[in-house]
Structures are given as structure tokens and as C-alpha cells.
Image (cartoon, rainbow, N blue to C red; front, side):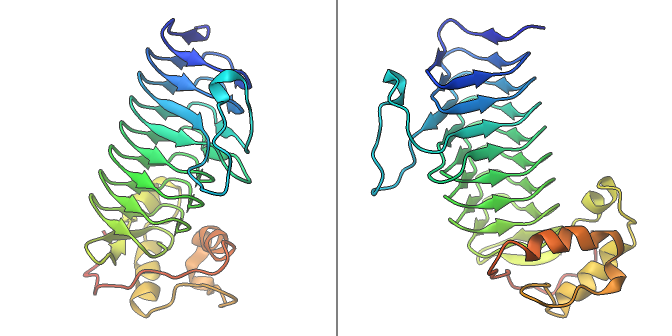
Length: 247
């Protein structure tokens, strides 16, 4: 299949398209934006408008006036109808490989969405957020700016994410609480399912592996995800709400 762009879509200057890209009717893609191979973009999606920041010029990218740090859509990503993704202010706003951004979802400036992640319908993600690989964010959740959601975490529908979410944690409620760990996600990522109970025990004990805290040996292959989480800088993990068991 060759690249297919609907005649009613607008693809502006500074947009680089890979092979086998599909762009639906009414979609607007503004530069600078790079879209890698095998990406699907639905009708009415809007990608590449300038950052919503009062200290930055709101340039007319559709007229060839290019500015800011762009958007990067990695290979095999799916951007569904009506989704909105803004330019980065100092780094490209990025959608990872094979990730899905569902209808009416919003990614603000400088968001980094990892590989194999799902941003469900109606989700809003504020500026500068970092979302790890294999994260699943439920419908209509709202993620506060500069928050980190680590590898394999799951966020429940409608959750206001005001704190950082540790690896493979399950978070929901108002205020949001860590209520367990994503056992299925741990196994699908190729880890021993028994590590779910180990990770949960650390979270219940209030151990979130932030700062220079030592990473214990009992985390096994989960240590890489924990190291990524810790490397994100100053973190404010969500509180634990007496999880019953790993699920």
C-alpha cells in the first residue's frame, strides 16, 4: 500500500511523510512534523498547531510560517479521528511506535508518549508530560502538566492524574490512588508474573524507588523499568490505597 492522503486533508510545508501513511478527510497536519512509516491518521485529526503558551508566538504554520520544535509520530502509530497534538516548545511532541491515540484525545506541547501505549477517547494530557511504554490511560482521564506515568501503568477512566504514577501501577479514583499493579501488563511485557506481588509489596510499604533510593535485587527484570522511572527527575508518586492483591 502506498501513502494515501485524502484530497480534503491539509498537509502543510515542513511535513515529512514516510511510506504507507494514511491521512483521512479533514485532517490538518502542520509543520514541522515527521510521520514515520505505516501511520494511520483519522478524519479531522489536528496535528502540529503551535504550543498553547503565552510567551510563544502563535505562528501561521498553514501559510508556511514554521516555528517551534515540531511533532514526531513514530512508525505504526494510530491517531484516531478528532485527536489534537500540538507542537513542542523545546523538543518534538512525540507519539511512540505502535501507540494509539484515540478519538478526541489531546496531547499538549512537549508530551513524550512511549511505544505500545494507549491514550483512550477523550483523554487530555498537559504539557511536558512523559508517558512510558505500554501505558494504558482510560477514557476521559486528565493528566496534569509535567506528570510522569511510568512503564506499564494503567490509569482508570475519568481519573485526574495530579501525581506521578510508578511502573506497572494501577491508578484510579479522586483523589487518585495506587490500588494495585498491572499483573497482565507485567506478563505481556515478558516478565515473570510472580514479580507483580514483589512490586506490590514495595508500593504498599511506601517504597517507590525515587531519587537515589537503592533498587532491590528482588525486582529482577523489572529493574530496567524502575531505573527509567527514577531517571525522570524529581518525582511525586501517588499514594497507595491499601491494594488487596496484584491483579
